[in-house]
Length: 466
Image (tube, rainbow, N blue to C red; front, side, top):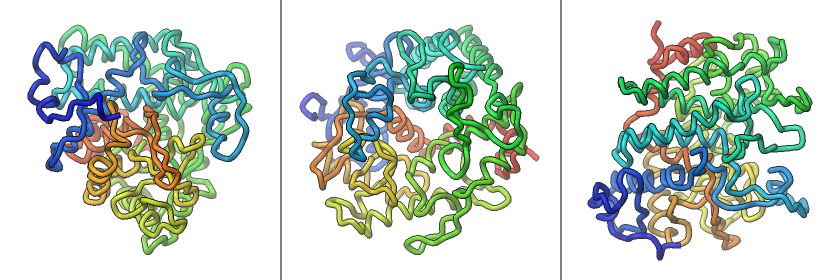
């Protein structure tokens, strides 16, 4: 894995502006660079991880490919359920044609970071974003809501499941969170920037979030299909990664949901409030031990959790304590997995040695996903840096690649993934940047529509204008 990567720090920084390197159209990968200080190491990890979105994007649409490898399955769950011993004899594959709508939103936010840090040029980035949004304007959508997976060449829906073959409001919320951040960032007067902003506004205003209530004030549904209607019947109930979906739905300038939907569906859930203590750490919301760590990442790539509160919860406390519980579980290591410890922790959704698993303390297969600890930098910077240094310097010969860290590994099974997933790579770039500068938080939290949506749902935040 490492032989193809340049091992010099100069290869990343000293030469990046030379024309022979293709800058700003190319970012050269690097290997293990000895003795990097913390700040330089963060930059290396962010930049190399961003390469997944820049160099591995679909060539036709520019969208983020769902993963870097090919898996078998008539539907995604055929592959995922291999983890639980379900036979998978499918001949259909998910490969380089499958693009992730949510992962694309994460990649858009990562692209903003890349421009801000000078890894790519502004106009170069805008041309890629224009390619993406022009493609999406003609691609499959359902009342303005996009599917979970899409063919990056044709724009046609790739079904996620037998009934999940239409709109996915959660994935669309991640996509539009990214586009709205980009609309805020590219504020110039050039025709390209004006064009891009107008196209984002069109997508934002066309998305019919309220359609997913099915004319009710009691439920917000994750899916809708032109072929299967509401047969998926999957209400979005808390606590999990979907808070941003309610915020986007409430913030919509043309098709917003009522606050009653939020109260009756998201909060009115058996798995919303917790209040128990795990390893001496109180968890306000969610499943026992917190669930997978991406709950603390996806929404909060754009939503700043500092000072974010509602009638019952301090979200900074929620996310920090969730992270600390997840780490402490790996230190306590009740199943005695090899490698777990203070510098090797982080259980979240991702590829496993068989299939795909939403790893957590309650669903612990001995698999560490690097994105879990690295995307937690805002909450646990000292502990996340310990993990980063261990991943990079101690395990880098096995898990560091041209697109950053691979998706997961199990030292117990001596398994090291060869895959990268858009939804795991994106949060690394964005959440490290939010830790360093708060860039994406600043962009998203200043959007008037988003501020109105947060107020509508009863949130308090230092960003909100009273």
